[in-house]
Length: 94
Image (cartoon, rainbow, N blue to C red; front, side, top):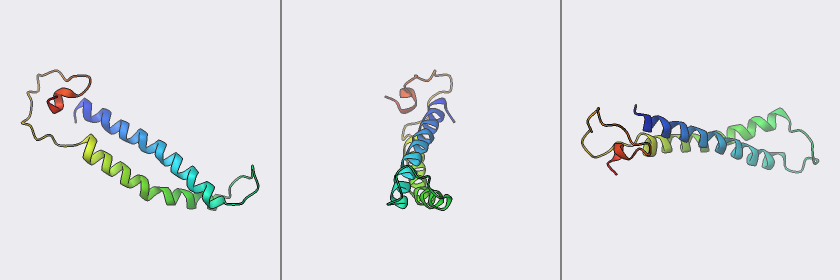
């Protein structure tokens, strides 16, 4: 795995974590519904919201990893001695 792929994989997972937190919070607000303002959610409500966010974020992580982070280049392999560009351009020939 190259440094560029590692960075893309890490970026994909960080974005996935943030999306997971946002989706869980959004679903939790829907599940709680008309609870009194400031009331703590019941554990069952948190679990339901988390279980609702899992399929969405699994799709995100799979798609971003497969089609962006580990996308196979159609170019022939470059020489191992070539220094990678910080912007990962050498890996994709740009």
